[in-house]
Each structure stands twice: as C-alpha cells, then as structure tokens.
Length: 249
Ligand code: PGA
Image (tube, rainbow, N blue to C red; front, top):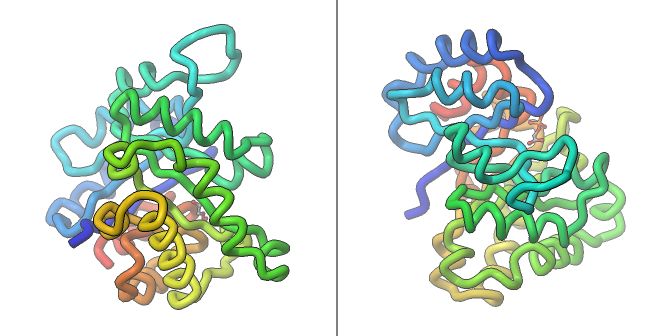
C-alpha cells in the first residue's frame, strides 16, 4: 500500500511572519491527520521559520529547488548541505516553472536529483506536458523523455526513494484541472515506464502525485483513483484552511 503524500508548493509567496501565521493555523487542523505525509515547500528565506514552526508536528518541510554542486561560485544558488542544515527533509526538482522560465533542462534535473539523493533529501521530481504537446498527441513522448532524462541512471535503490509529481503544465495555476481519469492515465503510463526501467516491484511502490489546480473541491475525486498517490498543491496551499481540507480529503 502506498502512503499518500499531500505537498504544498508555495512558490514565491510568504514572508517569515506569514509563514508562522500559516502554521499556527494549520497545525491544529491536521493534528489528527495520520493517513498521509504532509509536506510544505516555502521559499528559501522562510525555511528556517517553517522548520521551527512545525517542530513537534508530523509536517515536514521541503525546498522548492536546489543546486547540484556542493558549494562554489554560483551566485543565487543553494546547496543540499544548506537545505539539510536548515532542517529540510525534501526538495522539489524540475518544476515546470523552473523548466519554462529558468531554462532548466532534463540534464539539470538529473544532476539535482542525484545531489538530493546523495544528501538524503526526498526528491519530488516534476514531469508533465505543455498544452501544445498534449494537443499534438505527444504527452507520452514527453513523459518518456523526461523520465529517461531524469531517472534512467538511478540505481533501483535510489529510484525507490523518489516521489514523482505529474503536473500537466496547462493545468498549473489555470484553474483547469486534468480530470481524475486523465491524470490516472498519465500516472499509469509513468508507472509502466518505472516497471520497464526498474522492476515491477519498484514501480508498484513508486508514489506519483498529481499537480495542477488541485483544490478542496476536486481532491476527493483525484484521490479516488488508485493510480493517484497524492497531490502537489500550489495556489490552494497558501491558505491554511484550504490546505487542511486537501490534507483531510
Ligand atoms: P497550482 O500549482 O495548484 O496553483 O495549479 C501546482 C504546482 O505548480 O505545483
């Protein structure tokens, strides 16, 4: 049985004070929620405040990105060691906004993934097609390329430590969610790739989250699909009440 994961990606939102207020409101609402892993990914500047705020709860904190080098002259970047020291347990890698706006390639995703695994951070690796790619019937080609580019050199043991987030780019921040069936179809395809690239057992254990306009009113339908192991939530994770109702789907 795969344990569900509900993860919030705050993107470039929330100061430290807003972070503390969010967790003060969230914690009592999820105190009894033991059915899933709860993860929140604040911006770098709020990581320490978030780690402090969730102490003693089951919520874990992740970063939204990381650089693959251990240290060096890379202005603006942050290393895995810095994230671990700040109290992060995981990191989002290859989000479509990083790929689209910051030119992140499959190769960069792969290097970041290796670095995260080496540092014992749980990577949540994002894959997904754009609208143009979907309309051209290329969804599977794109997922295949991203899967191979990101994961093909991992050992089986490494692969078993990652979480994949399927996030169709056309559904992110647009209010346009993939139907549960569409999401499940993509998840099934990803699991087939995992079975072919690794083993059926590792594929069966792989947690695949859906992301793209997940809200309190559509989470239940998504989670009803056996293929969907959780959600990566953007906009709706910024409000404690709304994130809590997604956690408590
Ligand atoms: P959204 O973002 O929920 O606001 O669509 C999802 C994501 O980018 O992870």
